[in-house]
Length: 636
Image (cartoon, rainbow, N blue to C red; front, top):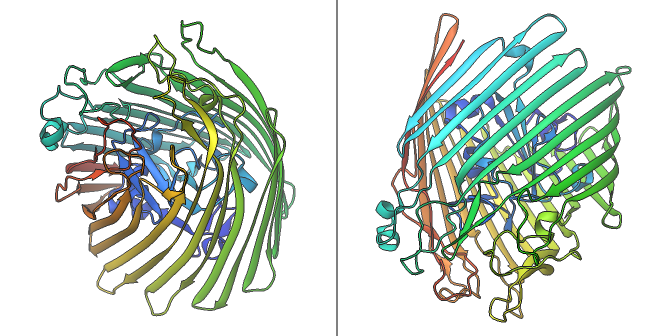
């Protein structure tokens, strides 16, 4: 609880003063648990639900936070800098960000638009990489496993002199993914082989010269685009894997920190963030393959001033963002819109952390964003942390957030065949808005025992959904037609024992209602479990660490307009992951070995939350079966 985090307020703050639920995963924990990619952490984070192999056009991995689809509503930061542009293209790299050079991962829940702006709605994730000065050497991890899995992660760095230090890290990953004909033969046994091969690579460079830091991060991900097929359709359709994403996300940054005196600091930043889908990518629906492509980029200038003294920590800044979004391959059909949109966002924000007393701290922040396409918007956040007694702390926060309609959503025309128009643009879309509330406590009732509980409430308005006109002969279009309300609580208990054994258990209850297409009433939120338990058992003995993780979730509702399940829910499923870690120093080096398994019992399970008005729809989505892997690491 004493560890400092920066992503919650953009200033160093002890975790025990956070006004929101927050989690910090240290480098030691990452190593001993055998985590290799960011998605491994999110699967085991309270309030997060991860669905793989999803039938989504926008991502092969779907992430839900407190009952809300969150792929486009999470802010991803690398050393405090945004990893995705503000132009709103789909994000797919959660499972492609390696952890070999990560010092700690900070995850905070709730609205953060008051300091980060658009898309900081449900969670903020900051990957803090190792200090350049501390990477005097090289780290290597090589992994092999089932399903033709092979990967390597490398990190190195050196301090050239007292003023200059540089570091470089990279990764490569390849996997054949699921054999659906073998693992789910009752559904896929009679169709052609489906190629779900995934491949990703990344590179990260960081250099320091006195107060100047420059960095470049690039991650490329290629995989089948969320299955995008329907096994219940005629067997003449070709599902051999011709449709895939090949998407690249990159970030370049230059930051200069100036410490005027021990109390006043100034930070100047120039950032570039871009997303590009290769023109070779394609999307397949109902047996039809259509080419798709887009690119989006943001250039951002920001200036921040901070005053840090005693019980007052104050920060204010201005931010200018210049954005561009366009399809790289224009359609030849003259009825389809062509666009190359340039727009700007101007923001000013201010934040105050104030220790009212030694035990009571309050946080307040406000940000104004003026998008050149929309009227200015204001987003506040208020929070507190009160250490009532030495072993009991209360915290709470309220905030508003927003997500501007991206050109990708306004002109969503790529998911169609080229001989007819299934969807038309809607230039009148409004920003989606969300209010988040949370109240909770942390307690230490006994030695080596901690207890945390919190209640939450989300209220979303102007949610963008597709207006489905498939049966009328008219084109579909996106519109601000939906609202949602989710609420629940989470309870976490952690216990450490003197013999090296530790156990933590988290229970999350999530309920809620949302508007649904073609229905005149609110229905249960879909695709997220109403009940979810995540448990983690770790046992350390000398140089060995054994981890056993269990995830149980129940009552994942389908949409009431689904013609097959009509709102029915999925029964409970239990998934176990395990890892055995061994590390041993040898002279100037340290060796490590991890032997692990995901879905240890090879449980074959589905999600059934598809909104499908067609009788031959895809009502059940297969999830990943058992995987085994062996990782060998060397630090020198």
